[in-house]
Length: 190
Image 1 (cartoon, one colour):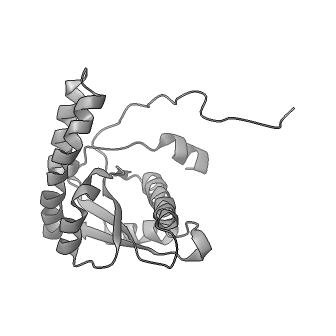
Image 2 (cartoon, rainbow, N blue to C red; image 1 turned 90 degrees about the horizontal axis):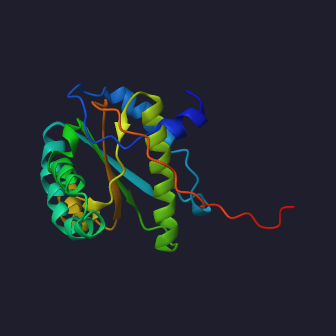
Image 3 (cartoon, helix red, strand yellow; image 1 turned 60 degrees about the vertical axis):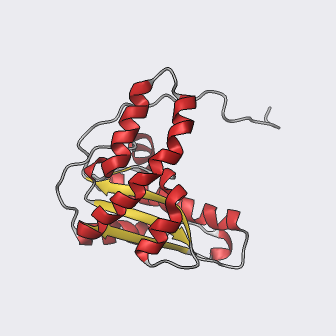
């Protein structure tokens, strides 16, 4: 799969097969994902990859974050209650994904905004490489509303949760969302 195909073909997957993901495949994906750029080359990301019972416990904790997201969904999708309900179902079990990844940043003597960007670049690599390897993912920031609980569960101190992503073999083929027009402004060209 070439880069253009990976970028245009990747989708947010919300339904996964129960097939386990081999640890060596996850390690291969991370070996490439961590080649992301980072401010001052700090590479101050930290990823926790959970499977089995640990993953189940994390899902139970992260599912409580839906209550904080629901008011926003009610406002955005008042005319589309099916979206709200499908999101509720997804948050409850994270689509039955066999793996969940928690992405953090460690303090690095820089602005937090730079650290967020560092981790975001690594997450994007993770999503693209996982897709190239036949896995599905879904970048989730909603669970950050229960970051304290997730961090306590993982034994994490002095780090900031940026996002989580369930990961596994897709059990759906999400539709291609349209791209919004006029998102690039060119200046100074003839």
